[in-house]
Image 1 (spheres, rainbow, N blue to C red):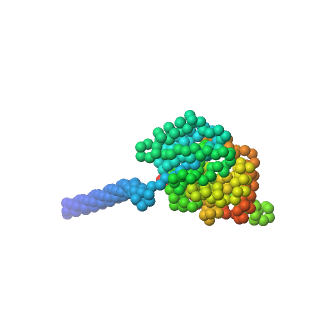
Image 2 (cartoon, one colour):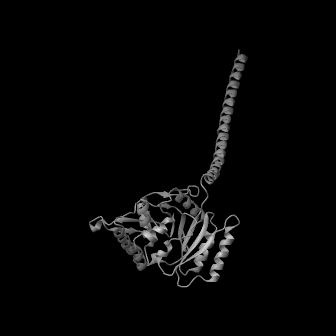
Image 3 (tube, rainbow, N blue to C red):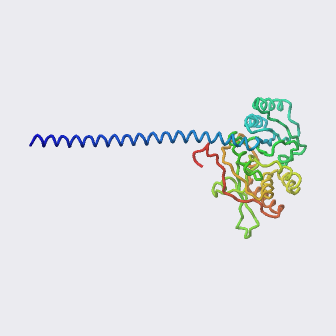
Length: 329
């Protein structure tokens, strides 16, 4: 009896051991399957993502003819900055031409033109040839940066100052954003306006700088020191906008960028689009660094409201972000 009892007990232990072993094997198999499935899913997702990026570019090239943009660069007696900016932007892939707005009393020197042409040709490569032109102006006026350019080959204009650098990838992203809304301004430097309630009416406005934009999350302008817009606005600014606005800009040497924001908003009925991008300001001085700058800009806003007969600027909170290049939006 005792032997049979021990044998039954041994059999039961063997069964339990086999059950536990089988159970652990099943668990391990399930875990291995889960891990393998996860790895395969991640790999397929990664390859699908990169494939989607390439396919979208290919489809875009098939459906929309490739047409780049022109840079219109404002400069004034800062030749080192001009050389540095032209050297950088001439390597951007979507660029087709560079127009330097020249308002100095003397024409550009031959050594300067030779240096810049050499840089542009070196960066252009064999697949494309970037055109470089100096747009010479007899009068020194900030309105010169928005004069109509008769031989402009592209619809898109990237207006930029000579002391501001953005990466080519940021410029290309902003260009693609602009192509989705070509009637509005798309730029990197937002500003805001608001009604001054302390005046007791709704007819007086305040100009707000970057910190006002940061605090409220709202903007109504993007400055032309770094912005895309359609070339048709050159003609509207020069030929159809009130001459008194241009005279005010020339006299005060300020606010041509606000005037262009008013013009585009008035014509399009749409707000601008702020594109997030890292800005590198390589210059040290400018109009905005002078005392009383915000007060003078506020005067410009109210003067232009009177000239346009209304406030055309439209506040917005929209910001375009290239999610492929940033971790946090």
